[in-house]
Length: 182
Image (cartoon, rainbow, N blue to C red; front, side, top):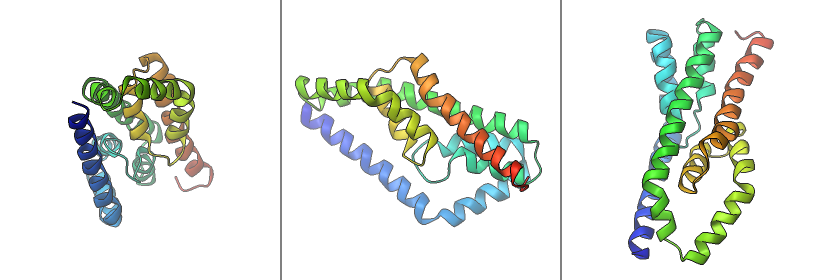
């Protein structure tokens, strides 16, 4: 049973890394795709690409999508709300998805003693690492998956993940406003 779970987790990780590499190697194309769709479709594109940007870890976050929307003349408040809501929606899906599908896989991949150590480590540093991931370029989605699979409470997830992520989106838009780009 442990071997099957480890194989599943390794394959899952390989698929995620492959998708990340595809985005990283085609970053210019994806930036162009986002820009052109936001120009054409406006607010729905801001929500859609903010949602998609947090499906897996990759360098284009919802703050980049929100920035494009604001630069193209969309209302900054609506852009902020839609980008934040898109990120929140997919973060909750990732959180509950990992709680449902990854929790038992992670638990069964290690001995109970090893899993207990990992759980202790996550309880000690999980909240801090989640805030750090939400505010910095550290892989945010990975920490969302860990939060769900290690059973973080939803209230804590909101406090330590979605609020800092919303702050990050707002901060980037505020900086663009202050320097006169929007």
